[in-house]
Image 1 (cartoon, rainbow, N blue to C red):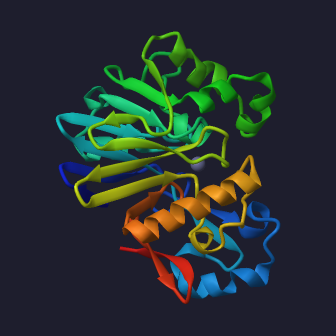
Image 2 (image 1 turned 180 degrees about the horizontal axis):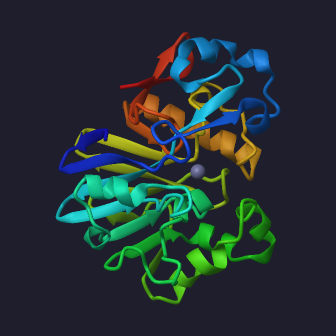
Length: 279
Ligand SMILES: [Zn+2]
């Protein structure tokens, strides 16, 4: 498991990969990024060989993050759930049991980020934790019109997410809020309307947990390459541009949910363009 020290925080990238246990899933580039012509991928194939297991597919890694510090244990995102994910086993390998978690921060409410929020009996999978999500995301997901967007891969909101509100353990937050010492919410809309990143700061050490603002490292360079998973192409592009320039300018350590390993990297500038550089 890859870890990063951010001052007093230790941040672990916790694998939640799916069918291909060690790597994640192979997904067609053409299906994921229908507007991007195949030849446009070529420079990225050469630069990021490990991200292209076969030439016309990308490798979808899946991870959550564990933050330990300031006598607090935070889980960022709740994975794919028992059907596909292995988050709980990955936490156990780190010596973490579900009742060790104080806060579950959900970057957004897609199925692959909320799968372990509640058990099949509708009780919290992390029994001592409070749960936090952006109010914009919560309100959107609760509207009937949004349901199709979230439930493309199966119904889950009514049983596995929305009951959080009735359990009196949910905190609705907004960009700029601090959810723990040095852990602040960054509104990063576009993928979903209320999608959020987290910025972990301790003195000069800074880490951006970008969640699904980026699905492929090529998007660190090509901000306008929108995947079929993004709700709002223009908003998602603007978020990628903003996060990328902030990461380059401030030398942030960066991690994204769906990049296969290495889990942490930085944004570097070469020839006037920004690129992902795994650490
Ligand atoms: Zn995702």
